[in-house]
Image (cartoon, rainbow over all chains, first blue to last red; front, side, top):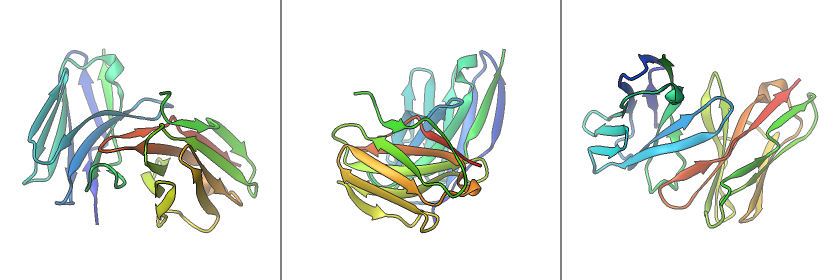
Amino acid sequence: GEDVEQSLFLSVREGDSSVINCTYTDSSSTYLYWYKQEPGAGLQLLTYIFSNMDMKQDQRLTVLLNKKDKHLSLRIADTQTGDSAIYFCAESTSRGNTPLVFGKGTRLSVIA
Amino acid sequence: DAGVIQSPRHEVTEMGQEVTLRCKPISGHDYLFWYRQTMMRGLELLIYFNNNVPIDDSGMPEDRFSAKMPNASFSTLKIQPSEPRDSAVYFCASSFGSQAFFGQGTRLTVV
């Protein structure tokens, strides 16, 4: 079945880059997503990438996809204290209309 | 649009009571999802609808859980009777195309 794995914790210093990694098992994954969850809040869609792309950049965020290894990463440049949150990787096998399968989330702590 | 709206934000109830969670999806979205989030199990899909029709409810934990979508702008998730192990944050999400948007969630505590 589908499975999405992430490391649970990451700690970085303010101003450094953060790299959050994710692996997935479903080779038919079409869209891969990154969501951010702040304490007590819902999940905010940060960015997503279609499986025929290998990179997508959006301001401080860079998503890299290695489809051969089924590996997805999210790089946050110049990490700020406001980036402290849980980041979820998710995959979908259709145009997002099939339910997303989520990883357990990576808790990012930014040290001032 | 105000986004996906869930109510209540917090619910504390006694074991055995009926609980109803509500969701208003984003206007024009044709898919609606109910997820449950716990520390142990992460985000689990409970059920989802397409054009108000339930498509897959295999994630509903047991018969105590039921969900309805009487129209395109409203859905409910009901737990009857509630148990302490149902304590979790319940999220509703809606989508049209490749992006799913989540509500703020309902934190349910069953004592």
